[in-house]
Image (cartoon, rainbow, N blue to C red):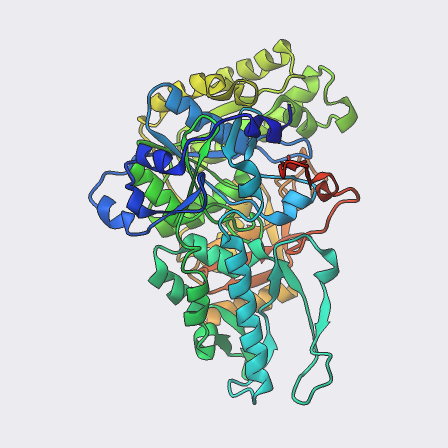
Length: 553
């Protein structure tokens, strides 16, 4: 059975019943049909005196084209916790339409561990990403309208981009203002995918709607002739943009196939932004359940680092345990085994690939001071010899591990890791950030590169140096750093999988995101508008004669 066939074979509970599992009254949800709803932010007031539950962060080794199943494991753990009688909830990101129709596919889990209704979550859901697109593009139109009617703010450089939530490489570079009308000034421009918009990052880092409006007002849209920043509040655009996001800021509640509650809200790019769901949804989940399972984008060097250094710092939270997902195939891939030979038993490739996993474990356990367990996400091609090899190697280093079989068995396949996590979250931690917020911009970048990536140093381009100097002169030097680099390697070279030789990280560009409250340092070739593959997933997506959607995976 395909993922969508499995999802359609399960009878879902009414969303009101799912909300009641978290002690949410029916009057505090706004239903979007039978199986999805928004939670009123007034619920926070009712929960303000309630103790927060334990937070479990799911991350992974560096991803591969083979797929590691991080979301699948997250859902399996939440279902596993429910199986052993614990009150658990998921806090996940919303899928973007770009990957759904592209090469990656949907982001709702797989097999017998999925969030549902999977096709609706993967498509329009409750309209949050559409609202962000509209707010983003309203700002663009107000910028150009201001320039058209005299440009009182003396805007000379526009840095704000339009967006669309689809993969469309044709929009990476465009020209606007070609109508020839008086006062319209043509300029080179480009589109971002919506999940790379600063507004998406802001939505996910806001504590409430007033905080959202304040952050939107602090967005820098460009610079005047004196090289001074021009803010959204200068255009008086923040009010209308916030109105468009009034519903989007409310967390969405759905369920797993085993009826575990799931809050799915926000989905910023995991490279150009911090790559995790909203602070509002995570903090609400922690108040509603004893165990909250959340995940961060890409591998632990990107997603988990940003979750900890950006999101946790801003939200005043920390995980009580971290799950690092790995697979036999991914370990062999990072051990230098070619894709067409991955399914062959190869202990040497596994041994070489373990160094990638060890580095992620070291980062989480020793650098951040957090409790760690490794989840071995089982595939049907894995041999018992290979599984036992990985388990033994981790045991030798004193690292707890668990074989997770959620894809094939649902929550039953995650009872072992759920039981181990219940014990692990009670162990003492010594959580610490990688850098001090008052460190200089370069020092923060260097600390992440050296401590987390294992680089021997950092090179800064002339453009990056100039932008760092400008940001610090503007008084924004004390913001967290969001490094955008390839997800496939600890280095900034996607082909350098094993990182055997000493390497440096090169920062070619630095961008200030004053509204979101972080600084993006770009290393390597990072696209904020992806393209479709030669055979996009969209070619297989359709609707049958019974109006059932097919082909989403």
